[in-house]
Image (tube, rainbow, N blue to C red):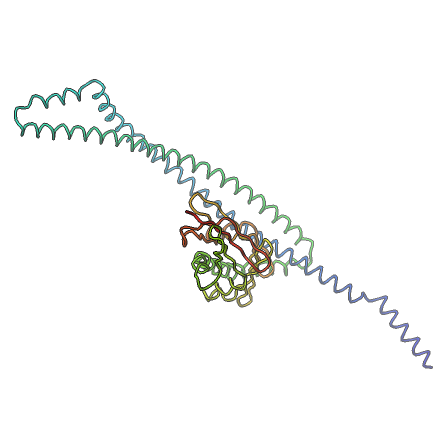
Length: 365
């Protein structure tokens, strides 16, 4: 009897295993669906950001076009001014060339008293001053005209570059939108995904952008003041054992302690120094952000700069496009110039290894 019951149960279990998909199959399908949804939401956020860039370029195009019109009006007015000053300057040059001014100076020998000589000298000095003023006015007018023409050419070049960028980003936007529309058209969860896209875009606009701006604005100040902090004798970051080539060494933990004390708004942002790269992560409420980048050396004629170049921005697991990174980079220059604090030292190299950043300096005599 027991054997019969066991046989029945074995048959039931075997039948269930044949009729029902395995748990692992469900798990794999669920993970795939989540991956597909995240890809679509990611694409929606990218479209949202590129659309903003397209609108910005469109506005910039209109501003530059108006600037070109103003430059052209200024050049017309300046051409008239140059023509007037040129006539006056030509008369002065002609007077000197034909000897008219020489004959005026000869009047000095015809005076009969010292007082007359003083009056004659004042008169001649006035003529010379007016001559110089006429020549200077022509030179100034002509230089201004050249500057306006140069500005016009620069504006025209900027306009062409802006148009090229606009067309490039517009093409990219259209392509991404077409891809998203096609993918949504073949999924049964299109409305749900569209709602998720709208929610993520709204959260990015209302929470993500302000948080990134807050971080970057405060980091901008912290980076500028970093040379003063690391060259403070009490901190032992500066190694002067080689006076010609001093070295600044700071760990990521020390850097985090610095920015946390520098500004409480940075208290929940932490940097990790890696081999050749840097990662920063911060969390506020339900928003998590990541900044990936590296320290680079910007060489200038007067003084070099170390700058934190951001290569990747992530918001709640979604990557922001390059247009967003470029937009933030234009507004916030995350860098420091050691020579502004120590005039006799300039930076020559910067690198990061696991947990440590090293800045090499050179003594400038």
